Length: 71
Image (cartoon, rainbow, N blue to C red; front, side):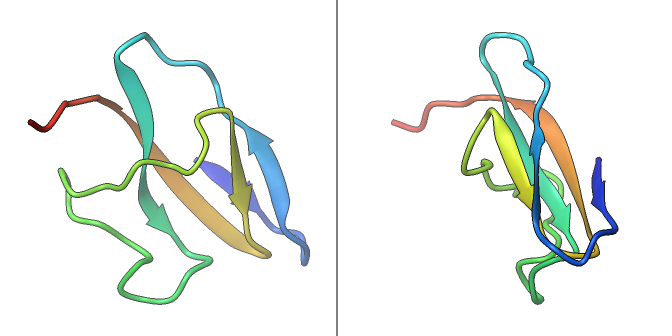
C-alpha cells in the first residue's frame, strides 16, 4: 500500500519480490472509475516494477502475483 496525502504526485520505490513474480495494481484512488479498482485475478501489471507514482491525495494497493505466460 502506498499513500500520498500531499497535493502533488510522488514516486514510491517498490520492494523487490521473488523471481517469477511481479507487482499488479489492485486499486488506485487517483484514477477515475472503472480503472480505480480491479476484480481479483484481473489486476493489471504496474508500468514499472521499481517505482510507482501515486497521485495527489491518493492511495494505491498493489499485489505481488506470479507471472503467467500466455501462448
